[in-house]
Length: 308
Image (tube, rainbow, N blue to C red; front, side, top):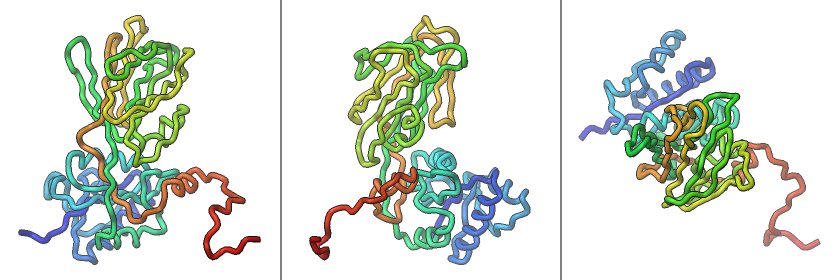
């Protein structure tokens, strides 16, 4: 059996700082005796930028996705979502280094890049399995499109000036119908993304749940709801809708929704594996990423404190 290690590097090669970070990671991996793996298009982008990354194996040519040990992702949440797409259905976990803005899915920041790579090489991480969504589009009695999502599936109006007419459903029973800009069906991981922007609650990532958040709905009852992980949510585009809607999965994969189309969403049997280097509470991550004000907080009194 070969002892060769396969570590995939995924980066946002449209930005120079990401290319510089990719070169640095490749240097660290080579020094450790590991040949980095990259998608061909990203490797080509780095070479076009006249950056030298040494010997690189190409994903899908030299190394297959199911041979990967782990994935190092350089960029924001969008880059991490793309990396999740590349290794879908494998055991490879994602460790993100944030080079974007908020970067909720990332484990560390740019100044910690070398330490993150070294700890990854030493296996100093634990893996979380995040809920993902199975998404199907049904027209008539036929499933015409299937996809998945880590953050959210969004049913949106395709035309700016026209409202989308929908009816929502939970476990085969109708819940409410209304006109809206769209409906977001989200995982706990995605609760800090589009769902949050639409007024949905933040759900801790270790909670097994699925969220539904209407967007700009004209209805008496259009509040976000949270259901159990075994529930099936559905959104039907009513036939009286003018024009078409569009389904977006993680903002990356799209499919048109004609009047009468039905989007069914339930928990996927394939979670997404995220590597964690530290056990920081999710509350601390929220405070840091959203820069929440906590000035004045003292917290529970410790045993070594003396009552004043």
